Length: 313
Image (cartoon, rainbow, N blue to C red; front, top):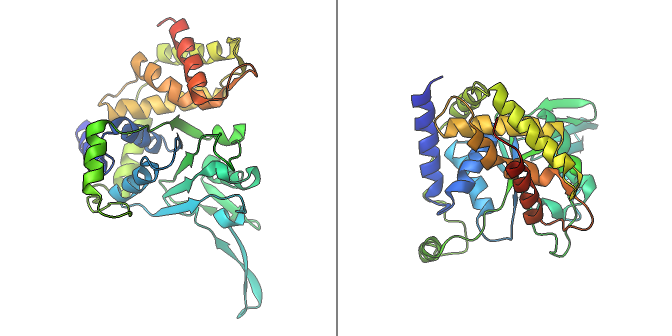
């Protein structure tokens, strides 16, 4: 493994994104963890705190093709993946692929669209390809969906299906910036547009593919795997949970920990990686029983209790 090269690329990406997404290093690292894991992230929070800016800054930092899809209640699956379009010259229908065909795709306010439309993303997210009328297109690598989700109490929101949520390796909240960073953000913004003047390209697509291959080589010991399995089992036995974390959840946790270890400058996963990432990876995969709220904080507390109940091997 080439740690010097990895450290240089990762450091440049974090520093570059922080120029516009200020005071949110944890969110930046979590987004990079999702990217290096070859997976997708779900950001759950209120509008106006930098979710879209984070996705845009990440894509521009790696010179990636970026598409933004504003999800609405009247959106159809074809608006995401594409469909058949009549060509008057040839007098035939042709396949036209939609905005999902990019490196980083922002699905803004994903839970404002209907479950039918949300399901259009499943094949793309799970298999990295899109199929229209028996024509299949492999999506570009790297491919990452960054979805934002409004709180469920907001008007016009739909629940995300379990299978949909399971495709996101991480979910997290960005939260409000602290006082000093928020003051600085307000002072430097002179119009309503995103101030993206400081976003420069500091890495290439090839650099990202290199980091992804390096993350896949990170060592995960048998004891760490057993520790992950014990946390998963604890989530299934918890009396506050009707559906515990799945096997895919365990796999995702291991993969995320490998990427996070590389970002942290290590060639192996440690227990603290698992402890830190487990709430981000598992909270959206469990279903609390009816007596408990579906709020994210409740699920995080349950996963935290599961972690505390499992002894380090």
